[in-house]
Image (cartoon, rainbow, N blue to C red; front, top):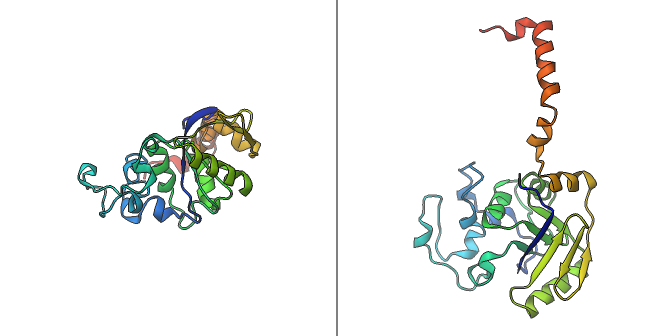
Length: 214
């Protein structure tokens, strides 16, 4: 998993509440479990005027010219600004895969659905919770300056704009440490690889019948 320390990026304002995981990545794309290749289908129903599948050539799709990620400079945005209850709906991890594959490193919202929030930390996408008044200020700033950029500093736990405004955020220290070091659940387990191997070797001696070939 890619570590997250300090990230500078373009802020894409998605001024919608209760964005569910089916909107983030529609159901027809859930057949793949590769974790990659979902970026072109992020917000598929909103980005395109025709329906697509995993096998559809993106070059043949008709883009919705009114959707923000189809306009410049937001095609290269890496910070998503959203409203409350982002990531609600089904528990599909594909939603985070799609955000990550598009290039989003961070999502900022006043609240997240629990399972989506947890899935973000498993995939290196930083979900930041800010008070609604601060979210409103960020939306206003993004509206006033197209292509607004921000610095997200996980070391200092703050978001900074170029005009000097800054917003502090809080995060569970265990999750913060894992993000800083790029540790997902598998990497955390592998930190104990020597102890696991020693346990399995001891278990094979103590209960050899468990290891006999059938």
